[in-house]
Image (cartoon, rainbow, N blue to C red):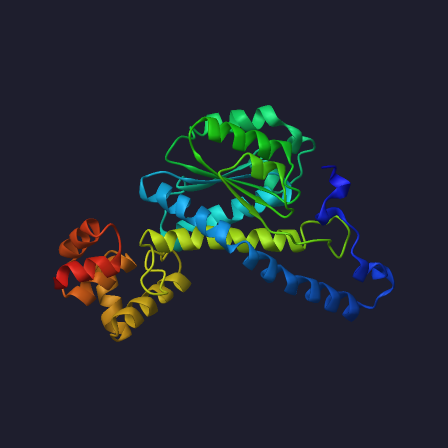
Amino acid sequence: MNLGDLGTEARNPRSVGLDAMDTVQVLELMNDEDRTVAVAVRHALPEIAKAVDLIADSLGSGGRLIYLGAGTSGRLGLLDAVECPPTFDTDPGQVTALLAGGEGAFVEAVEGAEDDVETAAADVDGLGVGPHDTVVGIAASGRTPYVIGGLRRARERGAHTVALACNTGSLIGREARVAIEVATGPEVLTGSTRLKAGTAQKMVCNMLSTAAMVRIGKTYGNFMVDMRPTNAKLVDRARRIVAAATEVDEITAATALERAGGRTKVAVVMLLAGVDVDRAERLLEVGGGSVSTAVADRAS
């Protein structure tokens, strides 16, 4: 399919008079268009769920979630990756990203990088992608050569592969085990896929990483009990999480956190199971890192 034939490249009939609209009209139109994105993402939930299960399987077996993309799509993958260590206490390499043109392309466009199939394969090789990893290739158009080449190489190396596109029948979808295709349609500004398509990609990336982390025990209820309290705001949040999760006052929570060396999850298990630090650590280890399992094992 030619680029001009794609839904994301079509002219939006609702915005043909964009330059004649006043500011409020432009914003109302953009807001109305953005409201359609969540609906489009919902239609793709069955495939998103399959991808989450693959990612959870990878992370649970010591593998990685690796995003792969170019331009805005690649930057959104990298953005999701860098948020995982502070939110879920993951190793920086456990959720990572390959961006066409290298990390420098995050702040400055590298012309032609997205068309380089061979570099994509070399990047995948350089990261040592293997059977325990899941590679998520992201391209709004669904036809970016860098993403096609990267997914193809990842598949050859035995990795789980997922494609995330904003058009149906995508070329990258043909290279992946799971094809997530969120049909976002024409943009308010014709062809500017950093708009609705970018919003959809961010929503899906949020789902992929967050749901996978829930599946591998990185949360307790809706608390991020594996967060890293690395600044004053996060220390305060950790204290409030421990207090709320265990139904104790914040002074008791702060004391438990101090004894746990600032590890929120360990402090929660200490208080819920009524054990010391060493015992809480052992319960979590046996329970695969899940607070619910650790506490249940203590009670049984």
